[in-house]
Amino acid sequence: MIRLSISPDMITATVVSAASNMQSGLPLEIGGVLATISLILFLSMTELLSDSDWWDKWVSSTLSMGTAPFIVVFLGVVISKMLVVL
Image 1 (cartoon, rainbow, N blue to C red):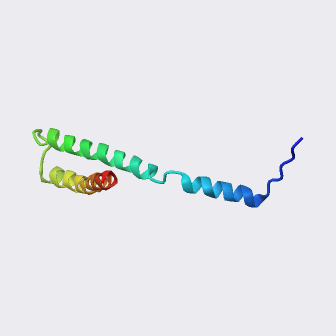
Image 2: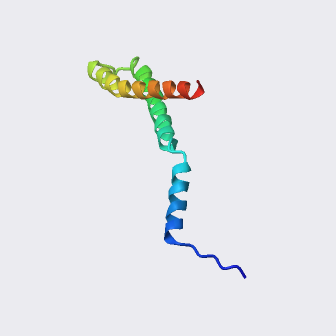
């Protein structure tokens, strides 16, 4: 029978090694997907409401303020994906 001795330092080193090998980009990718979906929704609402009776200056400025940050995030995602490919 083989008896293995495992020290707490070995467990810590194994956990740290496994954690450092995990892809840390997953939360960023989820955020990018959510930002892209939100951008599509904001642009769709803008397009649908622009022809309705509810369209006025307040709705226009509110949707523009909501759309601008998502466009910046979307551009960041596109640029980062292009840099990964290159």
